Amino acid sequence: MLISLRKDIRNQSGVEHSMPDERLFKIPIRYRNQSMKIFASLRQLLEQLDSLQDNDLVWLPEKLPALDRAGDLDVLLGADARFLSAPAEAPPRLGYRLWLDVNGLRQIATGLVPGYSAQDLLAALQAHLGRESWDEAPTEEPPLLALPEFTNPAAQLDWWLACARAYADLWGERARLTPSSRAELFALEQRLGCSLPTVLRDYHLRIGALELSERLCSVTPAEFASIEPLIEAYPGIADILEGQPDAESQWSLANELVVFGDYLGNGNLWCFHRQTGEVWYFDHDSPPMLARLFKDVGDYLDALMFKCLLEIHQRDDDSEQLLRQQLGDAVIDKWMY
Image (cartoon, rainbow, N blue to C red):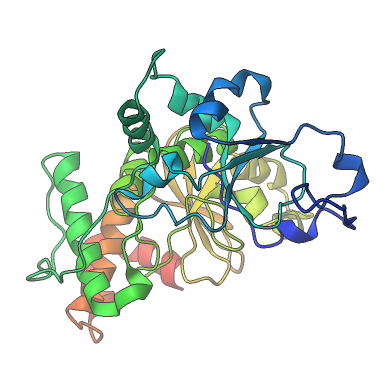
């Protein structure tokens, strides 16, 4: 399971105590007797996975290059690679950055047979940790300002990609494509305890742009906008529902919702239902608090990409009218007012 460290993790371990050997962890006393190990190679780590707990975390040296581009994974087999395992509750190690948990490594190791070669290991790493990469060349022409009829999911995904790339051409680095790896998506689903809707999974695996005309939430944990249960993303629901006659049913619904979109960062959130896949809009300002606006995530992403095209084609004057034509008054009135 791939891990992304939250900004505040360095502050949650309490008082630290110095130790005379710099090779050792600088950790609170209560952690000193817990199992922390350094492995000289990835192969050695994989051979000893059975001695580790599923939720133990694996750290890489900070000096090791980032693993963001195609071909970067071979550094994990190089002479500078070291792998440090520690219990999940242990504080960070100075000079290391968080990489995977042991459960994620078990997934990588599953397809390896005894006597595997370095190339076999690289192929397994690529299958789980590799991500789509895109060149920086601008698209020739943005898609037409229209919401197409799609004949299959692949055509829909291709259209989202064309819209996202055109939006990135308009806004540059802020809107860049950031596909996720399979390991990151697996880690997310483990945290949620449910599968992502297929179209959302495919979107993040192939495209991953987050900063569009609205913000999509990150697959990896982030301080303010990661994919997570609604009740964790907005704890103030308790205050909204206090004393409400339908509080019990609203709580029941809220517990089934997972946030995947952050609207404009104003506290209103887009959620998918764990069981049905329907898209619900959480509105912390105006009743109803929860409104079903789209039948699935695919319909929402269609609408989002259409909003991006309105910016790309500079249709500021009649953008709302065009959205109403596509989506209807009821959806727009709740969504944007």
